[in-house]
Length: 64
Image (cartoon, rainbow, N blue to C red):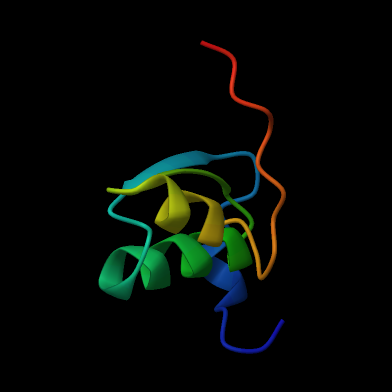
């Protein structure tokens, strides 16, 4: 895996990244995922939240 130090693997670990919709938060979330962590993300808006999941994620239906 390019760019990831194999000594710093995070397999089996879970990280929660706030502000993952853009900028530094997004970069951190991506780096943690590339290192093998399960990553939970939060973002300020729903659109940014879904953008964290990939290029064109399909959000689940809204259930009040």
